[in-house]
Amino acid sequence: MTVHDPILAAASRTHSAIPDDTKMLRAAAELTRTLSTANSAIYWPDLLLSALVGYGALAGAILAQNVAIAIGCALLSMMALYRAASFIHELTHIRKGALPGFRFGWNLLVGIPLMIPSFLYEGVHTQHHARTRYGTAEDPEYLPLALMKPWSLPLFIVVAALAPVGLILRFGVLTPLSLIIPPLRRKVVAEFSALSINPAYRRRAPEGDFARMWHWQEAGACLFALALVGSVFAFGWKPLLVYMAIHSAMTVINQLRTLVAHLWENEGEAMTVTAQYLDSVNVPPPGTLPELWAPVGLRYHALHHLLPSVPYHNLAAAHRQLMATLDIDSPYRQGNYTGMFPLVAKIARSTMHAR
Image (cartoon, rainbow, N blue to C red; front, top):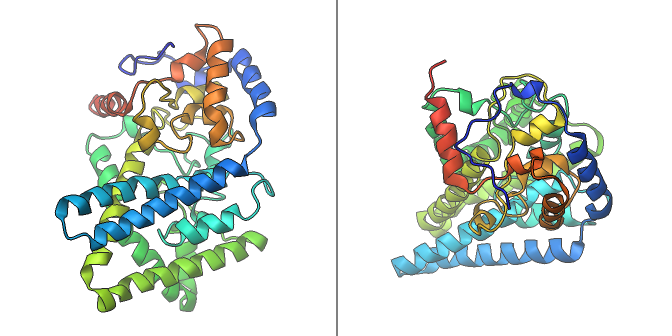
């Protein structure tokens, strides 16, 4: 398998000037027709087992008296809950009616207990996939991180570590206050209701069925945030602090994964689909660690930008078929990388270049 060297610079042309590779796009379209069916017999057991292990290990981390056992349980809980939480990405792409009850079940099991209900991502992530928005100022999930200052990367990670505190404030404080202060409500909806990384992004108020879904999810997250705070009086500080530590570690891993999901080299121009692919990252086998830090198909993030409707359990097969079908000089092979650390190093070096 040919793997692109992440240390080598990309072509000297800007991303916006890269033309579409019709052969690659045609091959991807063929796979979409054959691999786009979501299998409930895979989704439900994967989610339920991940949640069961995650919460069971969380209980172990809280109750264990032995420090080593508590730390081991915390690590297991973090990885399992991270996998369970990653299904939020699938929810944004699942066609209506494809997996009855899965969205509701995920929110009850994961979204509300982790204070990341799916409304925070649904209707946001799809804008990242819009042909004319990706990599522009209107993309909620894009910043030219590789072209920013060196301190921007550590800040990017530190902010993620504070996520549990921010979520408790968002749902436990801002939600109830915004219900009685209309101007605050408008600000909360526009600026504090999206899992995005672009600080300039502003969200529109929800309408119709989506608004009703938003409201019950937000109410659930609000009640859970208040229950977390109230748990201190009933159970002391340990359960809350262990929960927040595991949640924080999970969010940091996800932020690191986000950092290497793209090359972040676009300066705001609209890009072709091929250019978007080349600005994105696959970390395919034979490496096994990416399955832990980029679970539920996220190790094939570049491929996902070619095949957004293909469910996570079919991405590995799609990757193998494209590798076998496309020529050795196909742009598809340039989107394949070896691991997280070379990519982080590449982006970090890029931030240190004088501009």
